[in-house]
Length: 311
Length: 210
Image 1 (tube, chains in turn orange, brown):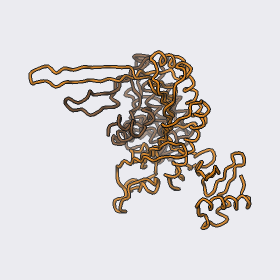
Image 2 (cartoon, helix red, strand yellow; image 1 turned 90 degrees about the vertical axis):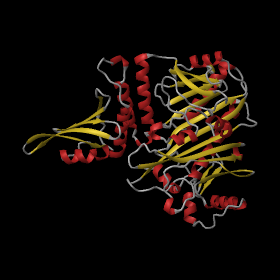
Image 3 (tube, chains in turn blue, brown; image 1 turned 120 degrees about the vertical axis):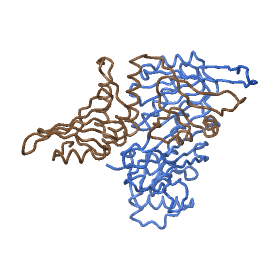
Image 4 (tube, chains in turn blue, yellow; image 1 turned 60 degrees about the vertical axis):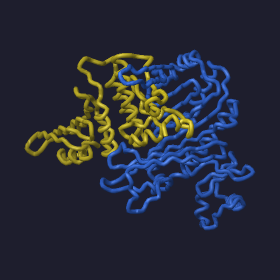
């Protein structure tokens, strides 16, 4: 990490070549916010990581090294979906094989009830169907979960979040364990979803303006800025992963006294032209994670960051 | 838009989400396509349109494959409480989290379960969590469970003590013992947990929680 003037000049040149405008920043501000990672050949300028790949691509965020002290993540999910469905036998074998890590298993059934209306006075014809949909396995800590269906496997981690490395390794382990019992399966979709809840200290009787914390909120007049409920859902392409992101936000009932809570739910996925080699899938997941971090940082404000980084 | 449609159109990654219904709005659960936390028995997770002559009603049921009876009930209770704790884990220190999880496992351990033992009321536990984060007691209390499922917490120091029964809906009952110049005194107080620290400190004239 350095603020070497040569690096600064190179970075500024690099940014300006691609349309960025940092001329308004004072030199000391740039120096304090300029980092260079020689190992990864990338530069952080004004809180954002840049890497040259033909064109500049955002590759990270201004999240502090090592993450926030109080990450607002309430749940993280990594999911793989397959083209070929898994047999019930393969599902059962997987459940048996991971039983040590996820000792509590629930069967999930799809249940349907079909009612055919008939003339008055006649008994209505009903048909009930039940089909095994998959399994939900829970670790003894109730924090780590695997949801296995015939066409997908999801590894979920509830708060407290353990960090990307541990979480993604667990998801990869589960995927490999599934492939071991099912054989090769074409992956048709890969996704990472992070549900964040921002708990904002609020004095009783005082309103909170969501826009002070999340940059995706209804544009309301100041007199009516403190709405109790809304739900905003955005879908956008994410070229860096050749996929899409779905971002959902809105207020939720706060679990804390004298707080207002906002949800920021970021779901990134790719469902076209997926690589199939294990190593390539891992690499894609890493890229999805970087883009997730970037989106997260793009949607929150400095006031929200202060909350996550409090002692 | 039904959750099923959301699944297809917006790519909800999993139904494993852990948004506690008590701490979420029903709107948010529906809009975000999130399911409720895991509990035993059947539960409707997804329901398509219901109109006469329309396609069948689809829903999902969860059935445990391991453990039944008391064991399953205790697991469910432990799971609910840990899930609640997890939802606010970012506001708790590591020692607090560990202590809470140990207390949950100890109080709901089937090996030491007796006829008069009680499961922990989820609402009462939620009240304790809200108090712990709001009032920030410096000392982790001894925890127990009352006959009705209320969470009991005790702090004791230098002849003073506070025994608190945490009840649902942010309510609590505190029994405070302390020494005055005229001898030992006892006070009982009931109210919102947001006032509990100031009541304890005022009556016992001490930083008993720290």
